[in-house]
Image 1 (tube, rainbow, N blue to C red):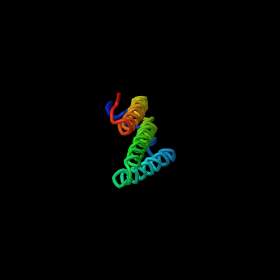
Image 2 (image 1 turned 60 degrees about the horizontal axis):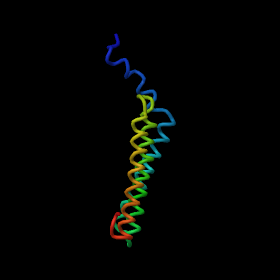
Image 3 (image 1 turned 90 degrees about the horizontal axis):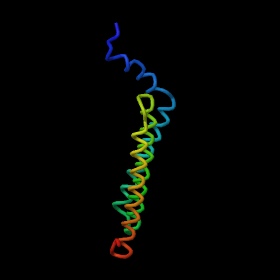
Image 4 (image 1 turned 45 degrees about the vertical axis):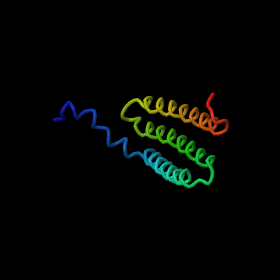
Length: 110
């Protein structure tokens, strides 16, 4: 007899082992590897602009990583929360990068 609380979990294993999920998982691992290399670049960059570029690229990789997580979570529900979060994070990343560069250039934000 199947318990009522376990019925939604019956198809979880089938979607988790599809070939597409392995490709997305490999993409996530490649993004994390790139983020680690960018973190090294941000810590050791010779100029402040190299560091800002590395942090901006890490933000972009984070947006793509969250979108990949949304793709992995698609069989379990609606991935719109992850996609909305990644879009908001991309906007914050862009505005913060522009603000930091403007502050470095003019030593003021206004």
